[in-house]
Amino acid sequence: MAKYSSKPTVINRPASSLAAKFADFSTLNDSLAALPEEERAKVGNVEFTCDTIKIVTPQVGDIVLKAVERTDSRVRLQAQNSPVPMTLEVDLKPVSDDSTEVTGTIDVDIPVMLRPLVGPSLQKAADQFGTLFANLA
Image 1: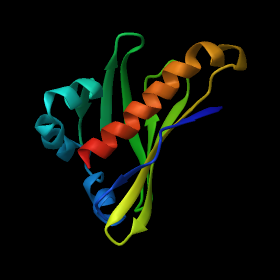
Image 2: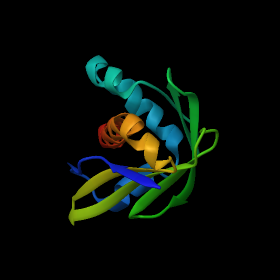
Image 3: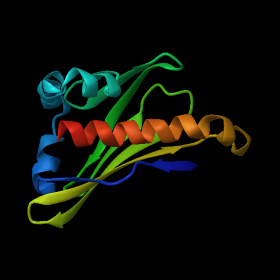
Image 4: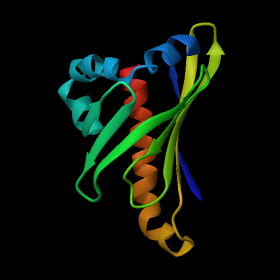
């Protein structure tokens, strides 16, 4: 397994508030629609349902991520139709009573020989995933 993590982003909301917001992904549709066009373009083609996030990519096609764990400190999603086993995690680490550090991590099972080829793309995806959750929070 290879792990790719986004840079931590501090959000001015308590971790419990963020965890509650991510308890139903469909509530993120309004936040996504409210993003400025420039930020929305960085997010890409994303759709939310209660328990899933669907990401449409030109390279792989549709990837559906289903929530398999939701706690006050972590949201873990597992890819449903990915060509390789993959999980995504959003770690919520309280910095103070009213701010939280958010980090996105992709854990993917790819052969060692392919890591130099796909690693940069996966790192970019991890960064975008972390940015997505930070922007929607």
